[in-house]
Length: 102
Image (cartoon, rainbow, N blue to C red; front, side, top):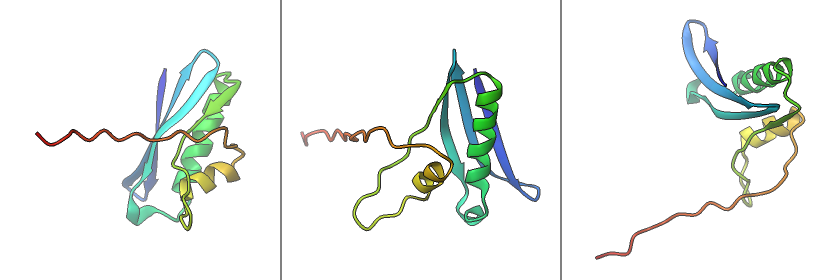
């Protein structure tokens, strides 16, 4: 089951995120807030609303992913998730395939 959520700034849709549920596991994905609407709590609201829905639907685990921070970097999404009680379980490497020139 997919449960889309949205956040509004006045009458403007400025952010979305989806909760997917399979059996008792919830996954948060596709969360984004437009740049001009950031720093107003929209992502935190989306995370919280989806977590509450997961709980209401009987989820016993909730997972999400975001980018890791490199040296000197700050990932607001990561910090929002940590502040809401998520814990880092592992870091997944990203692989990039580049074709060889012909």
